[in-house]
Length: 235
Ligand SMILES: C[S@@+](CC[C@H](N)C(=O)[O-])C[C@H]1O[C@@H](n2cnc3c(N)ncnc32)[C@H](O)[C@@H]1O
Image (cartoon, rainbow, N blue to C red):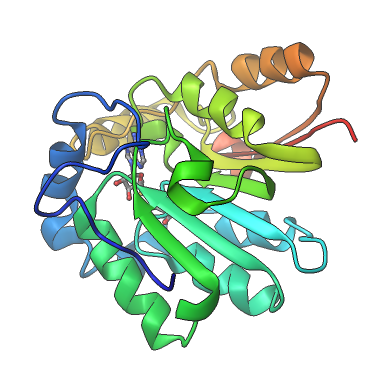
């Protein structure tokens, strides 16, 4: 299949998508219905660290890569250019965002190696959705801070990785080394978009790595504005 079958815009996700918090998809559609048209232009100034995550994916030859919360498809397009023989998969709960992503993927001529579907990143059945059971790389970029029950996304992603695969996460940090007023302003502004930087992100990644026998590399960028993490599973 090429870019997405969008089952959701006019109905419920197909069987296999799993449960999602009531109304969260609709909430995300509401946030992005208009924002999606200016999303890529505006977010490049404050969703920092995404390109670093992409260049760190180091996708193996003919590898498979899944983005959870893929939004407009911006990251998948860039990653597909960088790793030209890899296959890409994107999942998002917002039909509005997927509409923009589908158009972007088609514009780039990538429909043959990118599959997009609507689903909930906290509870998804990769085999039913993508006909792929395990991925070499999974990444989550500035989405955990918008996903209720985001911890489940981390365990679901780890469960969907091939042995020796890796999970890459970039998101807002706690602005640890920035002035307090900056953090207050930023968090107040993000709240309007239903975004909440996850203060326990590092702890959860550490405990999930320990639970699954994986190794974690956690980095703080831009004085804590951004957190970037890679979990590598055992071979
Ligand atoms: C801030 S955007 C990030 C988009 C993209 N990853 C990027 O880096 O530009 C967050 C995305 O997460 C999606 N999202 C929120 N909750 C989700 C969930 N439970 N399951 C899947 N996607 C979700 C939203 O619809 C939105 O597209």
